[in-house]
Image 1 (spheres, rainbow, N blue to C red):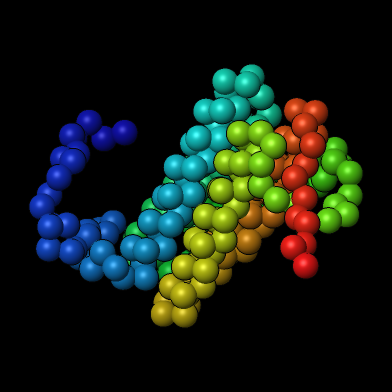
Image 2: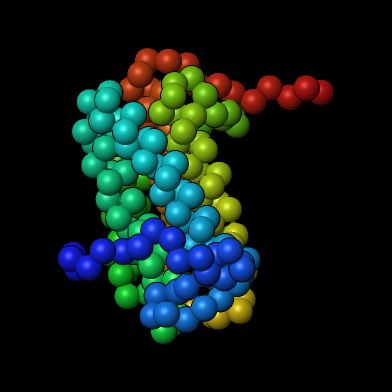
Length: 187
């Protein structure tokens, strides 16, 4: 880390502007800023999951969320840098890691027989919240890509990550011994 102290306020935001990596200025409502903002929000929700996992002494979930948080910070940093056209950090190897975690979680849970609703445990609920924020970040990245045509591998990463968050939410329910909440049609 650079020992140079980063100032917390610049006053640029007071006029609706944001500074990107490298110093370029853009509007706070640009697709680029909205996209890395959604990724940052996802990272924050995963911080709650990670904290809950640490408190529950669930080292596996804590380790997985720590890895994901670092991946998301890398992805957000890349999107905040207008000089990067292709992801340099998120790779096929990173996506394979996510797929391996999904496979592991699915092996430890029964097949899905109905639509699952969030809830049953705090961790389950926060994993579902993270999943929905992940889907929003994915939609933002799709919109951003329509302008910039880059970050394709980041899109695959977010798509796979939302699947992982769902698989982990189910694994948490079964590890806790609680019952899954299922959708019941109101018709």
